[in-house]
Image 1 (cartoon, rainbow over the protein chains, first blue to last red):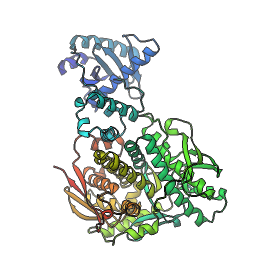
Image 2 (image 1 turned 90 degrees about the horizontal axis):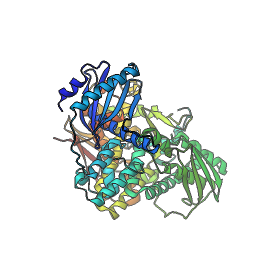
Image 3 (image 1 turned 90 degrees about the vertical axis):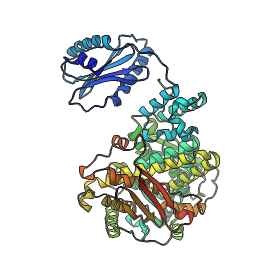
Image 4 (image 1 turned 135 degrees about the vertical axis):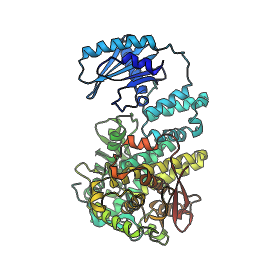
Length: 191
Length: 423
């Protein structure tokens, strides 16, 4: 999908400040559009939106309340966000904060219909688990600039190998995963 | 900063800028350094052995320290001695610690303990901690009870049973007698004085460095913990801390890795350097960006050399040693030298000559100083946030590297670190 396709999909939507399209399950930015006045960096935000939807899905499942139609609305002081799963993607729409919710829902429905027509079907390719663990770690670790050194010191896996996590063997991947869970204080990694 | 410390207890070895408090080597360090260094020890040894080493190191250094303080104060009864220990702990910025017990053991409670509190503030919203954070307070509490009860040193054990860093409402400790630890060589002011090499002046800017360092010392002399027992200044939580604690955990962890996992030594060294780097960036940077700095030194000129000289003054005021500028090529090379550092004098006293340059804080600090001088425009009054730190240092190769070319712990005449522009 070209940039133009996204721009065309949102061109006439008032009050919209940005659109972020996150490819799942890897939570990678697929495409985006932001208002020229915004200084957002889509790459910094897109993966978190994927994680939000994933966590929300798991939470709802634990309550036996999940359905594929779920939609997450976040009302912060500065912006109103709507997150919605759309096939292999998570679409996040950022609106001006003072837009009435009814209008937001209306605009969201319209944009999603358009995006549904232009977003491609993704080929499901499973990336190595080590790569996904490392990406997750770097997304959430405190002191992210030094976290691979920390993992290396903890696990004994050479730092050069950690920088090419697709080359980790099964044992090293398990060591990595245990170390990441310890560093982040998590019982499981939601990948 | 409402509770005045006893400034007369704080002294510097003339011309060496190594600080002592009550005759015990001390330095000022921020929570960024404290947390990162403790974390590195746990990464190297595992959380259980790491906590154990941090406790033992804290207890050892604190015993000498508290004994010196109660002797000076003429505190005779257990209650008087505990009062001296607790008041000093809060005055140093470590939080409020209440210790009670007898020769059979006891309990302690902590409020606003520096490690647990600052960990929760820095990391608590981002990750969940599973183990308590206050091994230093545990060691200090054990040592306080030992001294209060006139017990042999390192005979009381302590365990932190709840910690605010793990989201408990309060920090609590259980103290009980334990086996006496292996005796180690004490490191006190006379030992430090016996280990230093002949001193020297900075090749550049000695008068400037000396004048600013004196001003900073005068400024920090009355600083003490606030009603929480914390010192919050320049955007960081500051502690007056025992150099022996830092040194023992660093060098004992290093010895363990050298003996058991030698391939990982470079990784541990990297992280020990990083603890110095993050400290200097945040604390030195916070001081440079402060209105107090502007009032004392004036507005920033934009000259990198002025930033370097300012950093050397800060290092001297904080008790790190008589750091000097030996050579400077703008945007190319920064060479720092010192006749001794708080790391080298400890190493020589405790371990004898080192077979490798091992002043990791000095190394990390030099790397940070070079970057503070060349990568930040101080005239723009930058905000030294975590995001800013990440933007400068996360990902890719840093534009500066550091190498230690000479080390008094190895028997050389001075310690020297060289920061060089890459590419």
